[in-house]
Length: 303
Image (cartoon, rainbow, N blue to C red):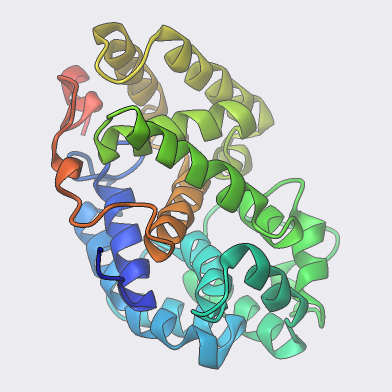
């Protein structure tokens, strides 16, 4: 029987596994951005562990704020706000409860203090591409009802949508996609990349939409669907299509970075680790099945 991890360990390991996988358009161990590196994500993953470990005692808002403040001490650019917003409610669920049942209770229990802390954390992180909206804008002060604010943003942001739909995408889709990949005999890294493609093909990406517009998010979805149609991990045609998608996402100064999808995958990995869906030790992670196992972008000379 495998030994369970603590909540803080689950949070850190989930973030490490997410960023290490060579997902198209994202920072990973074979590709950095100009202002955000693989090392920044490693530091961020470590920084949030104490806050997540105390989440069931502190509550959602204080956990989010503590995690973002800890990250900000070491990393100047926003590296994990979306991930922290997703992990905090999941980490707050009592270890004795299932996430499916416990997350609803956690969300129902959100208070004005949670909202105040979350809005303060957003200001500390300074995420890109927020713009302004008519109501519940982060620049106008925190509302009393955080769930109402998340519901107002649910149609344009997949992180907010999880608060509105009780984490349905994470709990019902992402964990299942990851599990299915492992059942197919794929390495965990390949399963993570394939999960990313499924998410983008179905929903686009909120960060791409905010920075580049809905048309670019829809194009990302179409291109991800093309990769899925080309084959599966292990097929040369699949990896060529994956490389093409990576090339497209990394042009235009990384504005097509599917960052929200990465946040959702980190949350799914947290769930899979907490509920012991992923077998430990993760020996299969380092065994990638394609020639582009370091970075698809390297094949085209982009770093």
